[in-house]
Length: 636
Image 1 (spheres, helix red, strand yellow):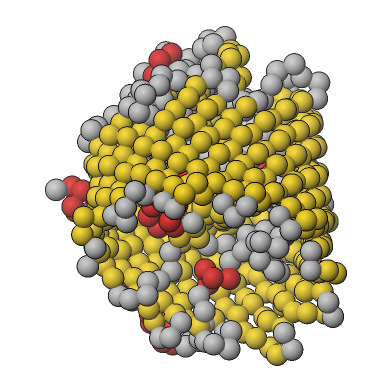
Image 2 (cartoon, helix red, strand yellow; image 1 turned 180 degrees about the vertical axis):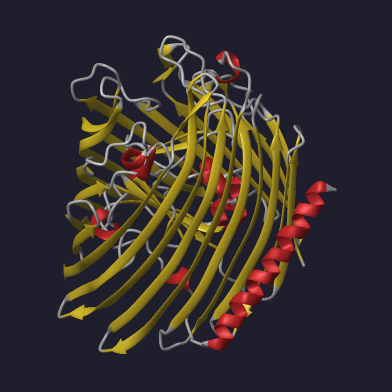
């Protein structure tokens, strides 16, 4: 009954959101072709097929075939990405792109930046807040992208693009349960508006517990999008999303369920709201003007029992309640200057954050850990794409950011893509990235340092793509990155300082093969070599080798079977009870079956970790064992 009540609340909230969107558009009717159709991560000119660099796209068909429990599971098979989620959704997940820290990845939701500059890691993102069924596609660009997006895009960008419309009015009901009692349900409405517009609206609820010991998670979310377009190229779109999450787990570095001395769980909660508008109009002579505005709000809190001392010093009981408000405005022109396609524009970002926190450093005495900061960043950018020949594309980008209280940053990005033979393409890129210090690192009264500088990166890559016939293709990419002025914690001074430098070298190989009609194979392998300056200790949770092999088989139109085998090599980790430990390698097999007995009904049967592999992504946090899931999607 409680789950049904949450579904009803989500549906009511979704209906109110859609009515608000419709009212806004009736007050200012504008034609458009849909915001999602013009989103290309990593560039504002050209399309992703012309953009030099390493780009991966997970489309809606792949999302449905995988039947993943979270967006993190979808990212696990992307080259160059390492995902960890110790214990389950209630804990803190991490996404590492090419060996960079989790906060070095810019995360976008429909183009809205949703990194949290107030978290203790300096600006990471809680991926648990995104429901898989809300997403139309995921675009991932690896390598520094600050010349396009500014701060935070130090290692790469992940853009989650929500669903937008359907060709005809449709209502979709979906649900899933597993053997542990997890319940997941959603209700979606979608359809066309006018000749080329559309709407999409969905409310969802999730209750997950006992998948791993000590871990529980609940989430309610509602998301909607409404767009209009015209054949002349004018478009207008409005979109919004709200998510409320709560979770429990053992604290990070505590040794988890297996080793934690203190058995009291850490509690977390968050409320996330995003809203934005986007519009564009053609000006004639091949030029187009586009405007985007967005708002992101986050309210989160946690209560932690701390970590008992072990090999390392313990962590005292602590907690905090934080709020964040972020406003963004971007405007730019795109058009042709002779043989060059160019984008010229600027943006403004205003961020305000505050945190009320404490730490019980002395027993029965709370030490205040509160702070409040705000920041305004003005940016100006230009991007060029030039095709001197049918087989060659050159690109360049430059951006200037002027943040309050910090030195201005100018970043560059250069790229080339050359088809050296009918079936062979070479690409080369070079780019710079930077990341402003997080609010916690700057403002914490206990460990903050207002003198911190921006962290920086410089990266170059070279890639070769080869097609073998019409059914097999492979891409091999090698890269080298220099990360400098990285923020680290100095135990002697008991504050954050800029001091670390890391050199990253890596190779990524990915291949796709349409074997016969109805059978597709895909594989990827990643090798990573990290060199931490003046340190014999490797970075945590970053294995040298990682790879996956997946098969998609449709023996008949109503059946679809996906299997995914993944391998993760041994990796270094540390915890308070144990100190540094080398975690063993592991392998995992997942299977998802979709059966369509009726035209409007899909039945979903999934088995995660089929071989019941025992492994840990972080010390003391056992990964979920074999798990069966049963679900459905019904359209009416």
